[in-house]
Image 1 (cartoon, protein in one colour):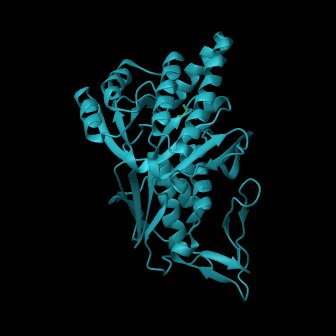
Image 2 (cartoon, protein in one colour):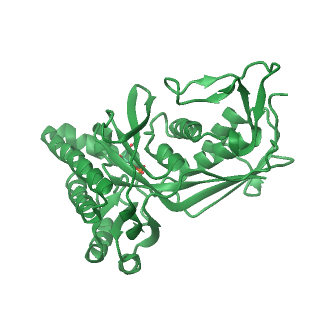
Image 3 (cartoon, rainbow, N blue to C red):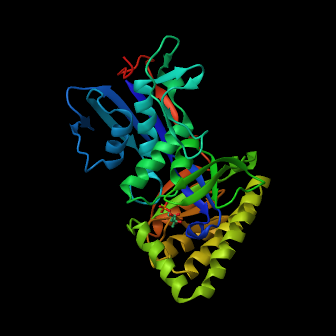
Length: 365
Ligand code: PMV
């Protein structure tokens, strides 16, 4: 059996403003998705017959990594609530791409990848497969899995499942873990990892080194249980800016607050991070993406927190509280009618959890 897991994510700063080029900051959370694979007589997912329509991300990965491969039984487990802005589909895609890669191995030629997607070359090109020659080898198990490749694949399949539109924020955070910043330019004070381009839009993806002070704080995530599609919230902001172009000032202010939040994070100034989160929320409310249910969870969490805000697209979905008292904050949110999850900041990214190091399928034979 092959098994891999990947974390969910939440956005600390910059949602909506990132659509207009401002930086957005996401962190991986402790809640994860785990995917395991075994050879099977027919394609199954969680014991049921596999349906490409119900599982477009897995279907898309299957076509990219497992075309002509033998049937698999896929099991998906996890504690990331679906469709709530916490990256459940990206986490599933990252874990599934790692498990499929691990289960098939990778052709290697002179220390170079013979087959796969690499971020090291412009626009994440596909290399190989080459005809197998003497001197080529096949890398198997964990060693054949590459985090960048899983991020690329996850971004590609998310985009195809969402009609061509997806930023790499979820896919990069759920594969690399930690804290990821997306911007329209290279931010000189952060660790730039790679550029991503999709349908003429480009993003620069960075990682942030976090100090030990993050060990003393928690994120409490409060879920309203209301499903508000991201596309509708993004369209709502676009209409506002079209009707009132002066409101772009608020988008730019979110960018300024995000940069202040990143600086506070790097310094380990958790009070500063919390203040920036709450300020960010006031602007999100002002551009119309909060709702009364989010506001009541936010008011309930505020007295015991360093900072509170909605996270993701808004209109429903989730809020987050940065707190030193996770139990107290979580109880307050639950009393106000929200369901909660507790996470440390910046969880581990992709993990290959078990591999017997013999591929389930050798496509190079
Ligand atoms: O709810 P999520 O995690 O899909 O976040 C949406 C973030 C937006 O900035 C609102 C949209 C986007 O594409 O960046």
